[in-house]
Amino acid sequence: MRKKVTVIGAGNVGATLAHRIVDKQLADVVLIDILEGVPQGKGLDLLQAGPIEGYDVKIKGTNDYKDTANSDLVVMTAGFPRKPGMSRDDLLKANFEVVKSAVEQAAKYSPDAILIVVTNPLDAMVQTAYRVSGFPKNRVIGMAGILDSARYRTFIAEALNVSVQDVHGLVLGGHGDTMVPVPSYTTVAGVPISQLMPKEQLDKIIDRTRKGGGEIVALLKTGSAYYAPSAAVVQMIDAIFIDRKKILPCAAYLEGEYGIKGLFVGVPVKLGARGIEEIIQIKLTPEEQAALAKSAAAVKELVDIIGV
Image (tube, rainbow, N blue to C red):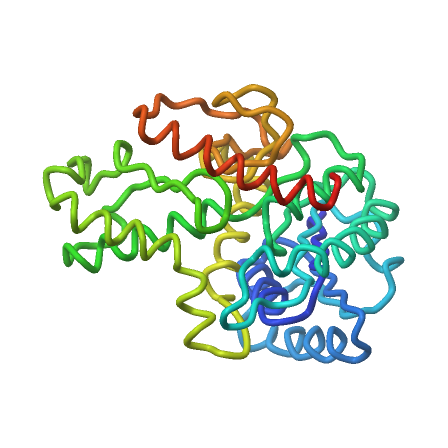
């Protein structure tokens, strides 16, 4: 029996995610949004591509959470988009209400689901979802580190003119200006980045990575990234549904790991059928550890504002 995924939000991220899920035949999809007609229209359009693309899955667009019942996994993408000049923090209170309302409904109809949160500001929104849903910590995950790491790897590959598949790197911490790319775990085909690139050049790439989302917002002017974010979520869904035990950077609830307690912060985790099956603790340099602590403090400021 096929898995069932509910995607909350039929905007660019949600609709592109639904497209990727059905293309890979990972699951049946319910696309839900408060706008009448939009999820239904996009769902029907995706369904009609099936005979051409060769996928046999069910796709339903709806405004009713009853249709989401018994989902194996729920992805929260709904929320107000970031506009040029707008920080993720500006989104905080508006999207808090969106996430709270949607997660309450989704959790009511799918109490055993795994919940992936994409809505920004990510770390505060995944903490909101955790509190509202009442789900155990292993079943509430934030998507950020995979996206930020993909940006980091892309910029390094471009700079060195090498395959992105050869570039391995981690970005930890909060999904914002204090995110922490980790040079000590950055390699190209196993070669440490320090042997391939001067520190000054890598520092520029790290700075561009931190501003990666804002760079796209400034170019688009009326929206934010959706191709790479949706690809990142699909990598997580694939790891969970196929029980790959894949180690990926995700926002996880920490209870003392890395010296951080009571917050969702991006760290390497093992993703499998139960969601987050293990938090992987890696040894950071003193500089990287200090940057991670600073990033966690920035997350805590947001969480304190909304009281979750």
